[in-house]
Every structure is written in structure tokens, then in C-alpha cells.
Image (cartoon, rainbow, N blue to C red; front, top):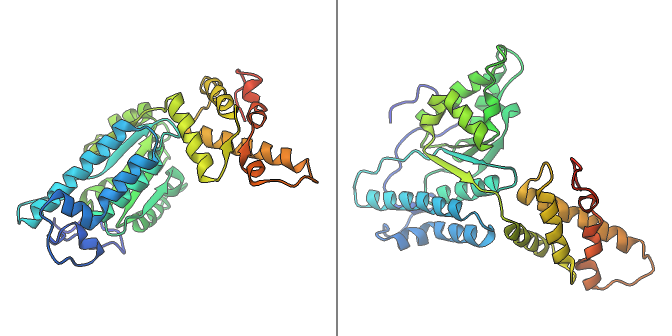
Amino acid sequence: MGSPMYSIPGSAAAVPEPPTGAAAAHGPQSTEARTVSEVLAQSQAGAVMDELDRDLVGLTPIKARIRDIAALLVIDKLRMNLGLSAQAPSLHMSFTGNPGTGKTTVALRMAEILFRLGYVRKGHLVAVTRDDLVGQYIGHTAPKTKEVLKRAMGGVLFIDEAYYLYRPENERDYGQEAIEILLQVMETQRDDLVVILAGYKDRMDTFFRSNPGMSSRIAHHLDFPDYAPAELLRIADKLLEQHSYRFAPGARETFEEYLTARIRQPHFANARSVRNALDRARLRQASRLFADQDRRFTAEDLTTIAASDIRASRVFQTAAAPSQS
């Protein structure tokens, strides 16, 4: 790849990676990998993918697509190890779906997989929105965008609600300047930065139609489905377990009723709404226990969410309320 027309200060020079196998980012290896198993073992990328399967509920099509991308990268590593041509693939992505469907979490795991396979230098993720990239006056946008890109170099830049960068109805909007900088860097420094654009699917589709240059640079489009009620209940179980809580007898069934009602109400945000609901249930549990100030509590008392802690939610009182707790 030739010298980039536009380079981010502090970024690595755009030079090809030496064909030293997937473990190049983790120190020298005595032998170059010749099998998929050897690449996965040396890089530990397989462990990350296993964690993705184990820790994330549902998302079956997303997990399959991530494995497909990882397979491409592993085979490219094997090709390089045999001296075959293996041009660095374009890895820029689009994540579409409703809030709380796991887009940021998967982006974090994707960054780690890319790092372990040697396709990014650092493996960190920088998550931003329009406000982090676009200035409010002339000459302000370019420095802001450059600073974000500088922080993201060697890793993954995650731009949430990316369609807000483009506001054609406002002649004084500077989002187009940020888009133009992003476009050039995504092309000329794609071997040192992976960009993931995220947001609602319909709005992202409109954004890509209005910005064909951006669309042409996105190699992978992943559409995140909403969680099914049973999957949301499993997410609740995992969240409680992570914080050393559990449902009391009957409380899990009450939370299932809560989910059935909450899904039908406005502003439902999948796993995010589950987490918020459990946080409020914990708050009610704490208030319930706090009121009994002379009681000696057991570990079971302090770790149990009762059905009453859930049923006190306004979701059970009115299904038409625009904002629920």
C-alpha cells in the first residue's frame, strides 16, 4: 500500500505485516502455524470466540458471522505462513439493530479477536458519537475527528448512531467534513484501524444510500435481532448471578410477567431494559430490608430478590405509560 494521502499523527506507518503467523502480536513463536488449531492456540482467538458463545445469550446469526470473519482471518494467516499472497482484507463493519441487542459488547469482543490474530496492534475499542467528531463552528470538526482517530489507531473505532453525522437539511452542519476524513482514513489506513458504524437499521440504510462512498468501504453488515422473551429471562439470570443475587421462589415467574408487559410498552431496549429493571428491583429490595433495622440478615436475605420487589414496578400498574421503571 502506498503512502496515505491523509495520515493521523501518532499512527503506525502503513507497512505490511511480516508473515510470522497469528502470534506476531504476542511475541515470537518457535514455529509458524500450519493448521487452524495451531493458529487458534497461538493467538488464543478461539478462547475469545468460545467466551462469546458462552457469555452472550442468543445472537446466533451474529455469532455465526463473527466465526465466519475469524475463519477468513485464520486462513489468511495460514496462507501468509506458506508464502502465498494474502492481502489484508477490509474489516470495516456495520452493526444495525435496536438498543440493547449487544452491539457494543460484540464490538469489544471483535476488537479482541482482531488483536489476537494480529490484524490490529492494540485491540482497544474507542466508542464515540457525533458529538465527539463534529464541531460547532468552522475549523473545529477536523481537529476533533483527528484526535478521535489518533486515539483509535491500532484498534477499533465504534461510532454509535453514525447516521447523525449526516444532516443535509442543515447547510451549516459540519458532519460531512468528519465523514470525508473518515472515508479517507478508512481506505488509506485500513491496516491499522477498523471502523464499526452502528445504529438503527432503517436509519443506517438511509445513511448508506446518501453516502455511497461510506457504504462501499463497509465489508461486513451485521443485523442484530431483538431478544426473545425467553432469552431476556436468561439474561436476567446471568445478570443476577454476576452480582450474587437470585430470584426467590415465584419471583422469576413474576419477572417473566414483567417482561411480557414491558416489551409491549414504549422505549423498550432489550438487555438494557432488563438490566435497568433488575437495578430497580435491587433498589426496592434494599429499601425493604432497610426498613427492618433491628433484624439480623442472612446471606440468603441479602441476595434474594422477592416477587414483591418486581411487582412494585409501574409496568404492572399501567401498560400505557410512556416511561416505565
